[in-house]
Image 1 (cartoon, one colour):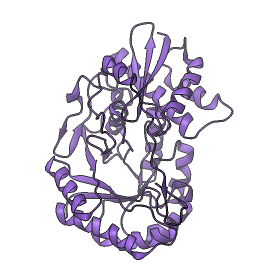
Image 2: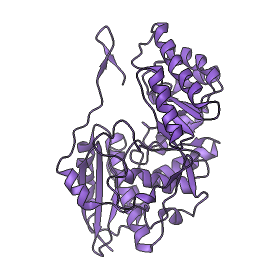
Image 3: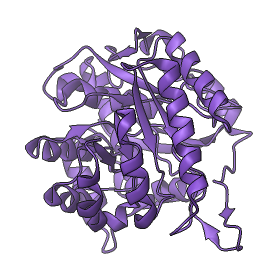
Image 4: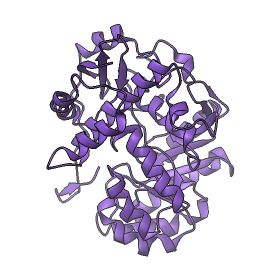
Length: 382
């Protein structure tokens, strides 16, 4: 079997899909994308394709090694996301060729389903609480929310009070047993993170995500002891070499690599195993499309330390297209009682609606994240 062609599709709302074709008619799909840099990643896929054409798609480990190490300059969001989508598609091909799900090729399932959480939003406590209550009404047993809007290095206490009011309203709305993740989104600098982490302790959160940007991981030794709440991060780390510093430091409780950013299935499996050795949980990051979610679920099936999965069904970004629009076997993602079943079909377990992908790719997108500024006009982290 030989690879004959790689084609990328920029599709709404903010995704990039990749199709890899072979001379035996077996195709694989991946989702190589950086939100806001989809075209850059597609260009990187096109560059990496030069090496892959004519190669046997089943030699995944070797292809990964060459595509990573074969360039003198390596790593980072664009390169690793391009590699991630290629890797997903290669695993999809191999699973289809052998008529088994990817999880079977990785050693077989340790679970049949995994708990999922729903993102909630709202500008006022009542709005956030209502969104949380609605998510629970749809069967979710865990939700995640943004903690704050823009926040200066040292900010006024009203910003803290607004965060506390939102979290308190959600906790009151959903009761004591629903998990609540609060995402600082890298918007909070260390001085204010100290305040927020301590003040949020009474709400018994499931985790606090990205309390500071990952490049400031050394601050965690000051922040983690302030609360018993688990600390989660990793969506902006791209390889096992990025994660080894975080894990060795010992202050992170949950790692969140993204299977469309951190080198795909091959690399995220290794990151998960590293985390397990440190007794750290895995919650794969995935506010993306159906191919990315399918890849995550195949990983969740085989990673013992996976305990919850992010997913984008109904998320606010998906205004033009939603998670299930691009697949023909929508029942592959079977949601029930706050869990989603691991897809059991061959490869990634989903059937991509290629005709609809092509139709939407004709429209495409140029999604960009907002640019925020503080009251003094200086840039604020989004």
